[in-house]
Image (cartoon, rainbow, N blue to C red; front, side, top):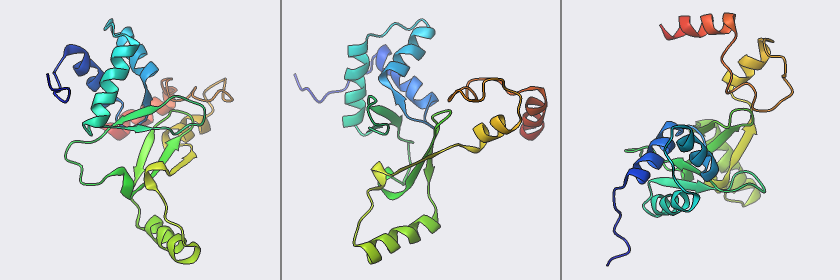
Length: 172
């Protein structure tokens, strides 16, 4: 039996679905398991890791070690994307975990400067700038949350009334 054959299974489809739903951020194997278990889709940890390893080797997802001391994170690669993560920087929101792929000509100039002036080549796959995305900054600035000091508290909460109305008006 050829070990490179990839079979289509329900569990692989469920894991892929979770990765696609979270394509804008890095997600860990534990987060995938938790999301699937919340939907009553029971998948074991070994199965998740086995499928993630296969998806990485097939080039469908990327594996990252972004946060020191934390387990690996994974991200779905956009189908049909001509850009790879080796050609741009990444921004990661410390509040919601969103990962932004940043294609910016200004940063290309920074690359040139670093190469020319400092004889150093930047590895974009591992280059992540940390901060706060605009959505989380807006939620924090509106002042409607009581526990503003708790990281991650803004991303999974619904917007307050005025913010929700503003978002509703923008989406129409």
